[in-house]
Length: 628
Image 1 (cartoon, rainbow, N blue to C red):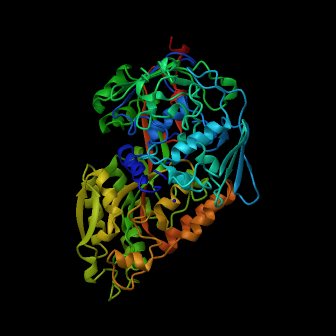
Image 2: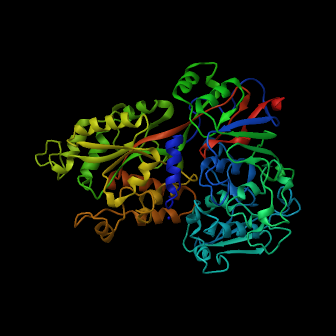
Image 3: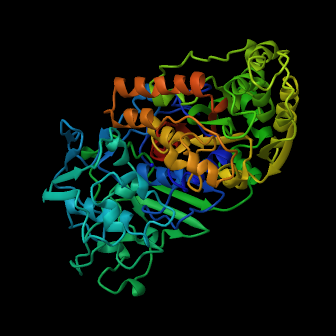
């Protein structure tokens, strides 16, 4: 280069994971997709939802690197060339499908040229409802994503593989040479190297078309021109919904004089209404049940969940239910239908710095995998509702369940096995007498970073106790959740272990796990290769590591998998890499594949989990008799 970094921004997704405990697979563990009172789902009604925190980047699609914002885009506001149906993998939610495109793209034999055909006759929301969506509008969006002033906090690194993308962003070219529109309904994308997941990259909101400004055809960024910091409030929709008040936007006056939509008041509220330009016959991916979606911003989490129980709020988007609420809904038969628990494409793990003794020895790293009580850690985190024991690195949904039953360090009930750990430690150079206990001084005062928020200290205590059994004395340092990520990536600081850090996908392909976590391009000061895989001798020397320190690299294997087209060979390649990492490199102790727990009000009779986004599918919420 993720994700959630793809570059430094990958940390954002990791922060979201810590806050939201997300990760990925198939199906609900507690409910069906249709749940609630009586009555079949039907269009109509007002969905009332709550956000604890506002969007991070003013709802700008070129900037927002935040899964909550992406769900609003996908479900409601923005259609992209390709997309997915907002459901579980059992229901096809992990399959990329044409959206604004009329078919899957044509790909050249060398994988370098992708040709997209665009559905004709599709139009934008008011006030530009007479403007047809054309190929140049996608070029305009990509030019904006390449522009540094417009992509702050975004994810342009996903598109650096497009020929000329970075040159345009650096001001070295007047256009992106790898993007062309030979006619209104054809977009040609030329790459510098094969990237088999380009269809996934064109599901991301930054690629959604931006209309030209009918009053100023020369405006390079169309209606987004002049809105570097606030485009989200001037967004023209292509999906089934639009901001309330969108029709009043006036792009004929200078950007500084334009009045923003009334439907999004930062820090207070968001209101979506039906887009009259939207044609459901051209869209097989979104049921778009509610007539109106009202979101309040702010409030106390406990109070918001009380409002869900009373029916004043239907769903809280960005906060986990408090432990007592989860307990109540999971044990009360009358409330269980409104608790929706799904495995997600994210995980928690313990990273080991392979440049710091004793973790430069693979036997020590394997011993950690054997000794740690994963089930105990999950119990401290809230129990089975929060996730399941993780036996390998890539979430199963990203590799088509090829490693569903694979765990090279499986122990009885996931509680660890001290004897197997000691047998591994006995083979290391740090156990001089072969008794399974590290007796080298490097095993004392091992600096270990952990999260200070509960249950972080209790998980750290368990980890510390487990490691004593193999002679490793941990020196724990508790940090604020977000801070731990900036510290773990700081290779010059030589932190040995990071406990219970997390990661979540950007889209449902293992590429969003592999390179950001294990490629040398994600080393310090980028993110988030904490284990130092692929670091060169010069880098290690510059960071102050001991002379002769060397770490393995998996760069070639990552590149091999990334180039393969979507399908079984690609899944198998990532699965084989996962096994290689677990058995021959061992940079982690995988701990938990995480779950998403959502609670809906009794008004809701239809709920769907958007597997690819790791969020509830907002357009799938429905009410009996259309909410009447």
